[in-house]
Image 1 (tube, rainbow, N blue to C red):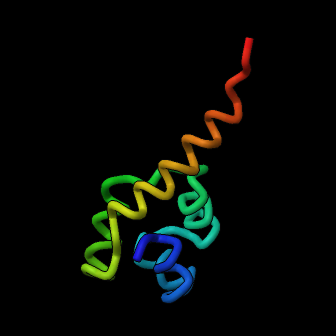
Image 2 (image 1 turned 90 degrees about the vertical axis):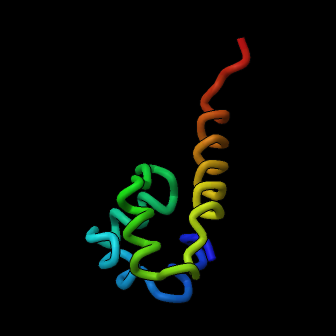
Image 3 (image 1 turned 120 degrees about the vertical axis):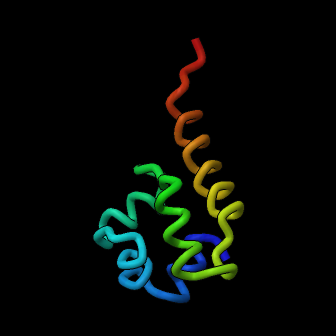
Length: 76
């Protein structure tokens, strides 16, 4: 399960604690407003094991960040 699914199942507080951040910081990371670091990903794998899908998380957040950047590009 990716980060979004993990949060739905485990809850924001538990996932934020695994990362050592506040729930607000977790929300920023989940939305792509703040980057997830390698250390964040490692902490999630360490805390939740193989149930956490790193690839799915990177893909989902990456797509969201790419779409946000594309929205800011103007056609000149």
